[in-house]
Image (cartoon, rainbow, N blue to C red):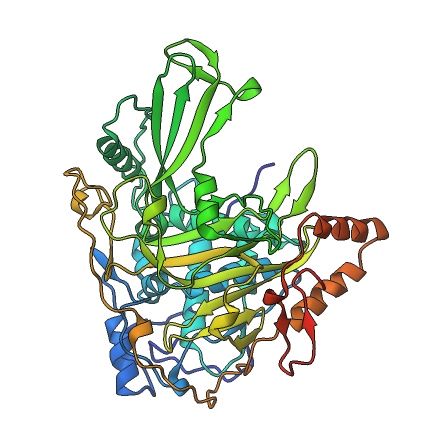
Length: 530
């Protein structure tokens, strides 16, 4: 099926970094107007503290590094000046769309890139793999509206959805779609639209048969950068190693490839609590498997298909690590959602024990966003928890609704996509061929982890004053999400409902420790129940 691709020229609406006035409407329509300068110097009606904060977020087109504002920012704004507490209107089963966007819109280095209009100078309209800049420009406009408008409760992202429909119509047909699939599409499209390589050389993939692994990883990363350089590579991409070993002659083959997210399997658990750790999933990802039958490897030495082993390893971790939990299982025997509780820390995640390659920086991470899925394989609802960059507090984004979130509500069995940011560095380095010293590789074999700076957790806690102009609910409540899933379930046929019940019964019930109370504390609901 061929998809017609069209070229767009979209200008952003005026925002508060320019001379444009703020919107007074309750819902901002994500439409386009012309002529808006994005200089930070002309900001209106802001305090000296916020003006200085905005100034510190400036980036130049020829940047060599991006400040790690997720953790190193010392300034915390007052409640009246906090931005980014804005919901996104559901346009008909677009919770997957909104949830992925909220995670990206709360990624400070990506936001700073677009708020400084750097995308305009880097748009690669000749790339046959991108959207001629259309998707990226629409996302940039949404980003500006989101972080520059204060007197509204929600933005209608219909313009971005319309543009995306021209390149991936499945996401705009009103059907329930997968948040991870949409996120992967969007990041890949933005990467191709902003790829600084306009003429990609042909480079044949290489397999390596000796143990000079760091040298081969270095060469593989160089070859990748010869074809791919963008803000997406700078922030989100790491490197994995795949190893095949022939069980007949012992030949071992290594191959290094980039990754933009880690899709982790969820191992079975036989404990009563049905809980495993994120490290359990990471270890399962790197677990050696045997290839036999139709999966035999064609050994270049034996010249025939042979039984072998295969192992995946994390070689280099990215600055921003996206983890995808493979909760939806599709096999010949069954189709189901895996409801196992994957426990994870929302700060001080140490990945030293699960990486195979030496890391230039200490692999310490803090969570800053998570996309959750509540419901079944047949139907459910996505919503996001994210940490606001201005006040360093957590919020729940449920389509157009924004609620305050307690720290003890962040980690739940509904977690599907997790966004972690490296805390051991103060800057994220631009990846370019001319500066291999900025790459994550160490040919001298020495690891020099950066000590970094204190995280915001060590800063004094700012007492909240609920006098903000934006409409933020006092406390996040899961009950409306349960009700939404129940309403969807009631619309299903008897057979479809039976399938959902049978799917739920495939997993153990969660312990009462992970039940939630509503605001009044009068009712408890188990995560498995609608």
